[in-house]
Length: 95
Image (cartoon, rainbow, N blue to C red; front, side, top):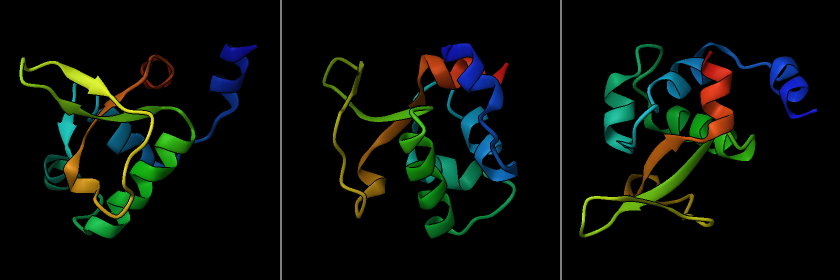
């Protein structure tokens, strides 16, 4: 059933572009810089929030050992405080 949901989930061009940038953890500013569709931080922030809502990416921080630690909560007003990475569902959607 999960695979069926992935197949029917539609992403627009910018959602697909941002998702494809997140195979590895990326800081918000790097995502904005690498995004070809727009450089507007507010637009990219909205796309990231939507991808989080769809469970395709997860926010987190890099700990003192250099490991990505996913978080269950994040401050949507402080998007640049986090790094983002695709979930297993997000990686499947990339394929």
